[in-house]
Structures are given as structure tokens and as C-alpha cells.
Image (cartoon, rainbow, N blue to C red; front, side, top):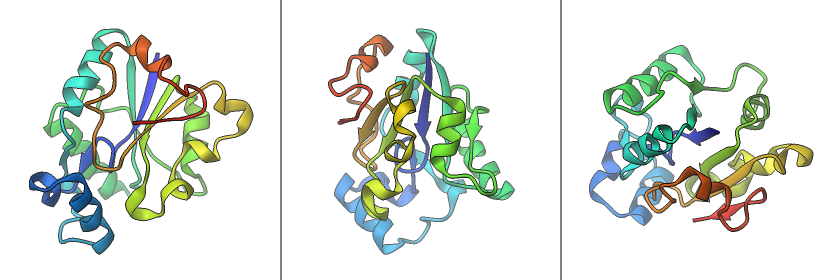
Length: 173
């Protein structure tokens, strides 16, 4: 089973969000709080690492999709994933010139796509799954979590992710 998880806002976040609630994190992002673009200082959201390790131990292949595109930014995100011990941190995917997020996801064709609702940057129009070709959407279980809320509430068993209510369309957690 291949799981694609979005990095910024879903798996990692700006360091200023560490001591505030989710709503304040969204507000910080919308207001461009200091450090929002310092990707070297990003931190994991909740217990994302433990959750991903549980899924990997059950045979899942973990891939990450970042919003970053320049070599320096990609290196910054990769270093954060490595620093905190994210499993399979080398499976970091990104948009190449002329690509959109949906292009990357369609090429990978994951079994599960986990992304946040992009509340601070425009909502659904900024998400990946809504833009995937309809004929491919039915092959992907899309799970949408609230931005900066993390994935802690998702099932520990990867088989249960496929059976999440709304699978192959969208499930908001």
C-alpha cells in the first residue's frame, strides 16, 4: 500500500505554531507570521512520525509531497524530515517545472492521499485530490484533515484507512 502525505500543513508546520492551538496556527499562516517561510525550522505536527511508523511497520510505503520546488527549499524540507526521524524521508516528491500537485499524484497513483484542507491559503482550490482526473479519483482513497491539526486521529491500522467513510471520494477528519 502506497500512502502519499502532504508535508506543509499536514505533516510539518512552522515552529511558531508549537505553543498555540490549530486556529491560531491557521491565523499565523494567513498573517505571514515570522518564520512561516523558514522551512529549516519546521517541526512535526502532533504525533505524525509515530503514526507513519505504525503504518510502515504494516507494509505501507510512505511518500511525501511538498509545496517547495527550489533545490534549497527541497533540501530544507528533506532535512526537517530526516532531523525528526520521519520514515522513508527520502521519498520526497515535488512539482517539477510545469507540473501541478495533481500531476505528481497521478504519476505516483497512491492508494491513499492524505492532505490538509488548505484553510489558510484558499481551501479546496489549493488541494490536490479535487484536481485529479475523475477516472483516477476512484483509485485513490483521499483523506482530508484540518490544516495544522495533524493525523493523530486517523486509524493505526492501514486497512482501516481504506475503509474510512467516504473512501475514494473524500473523508474529512
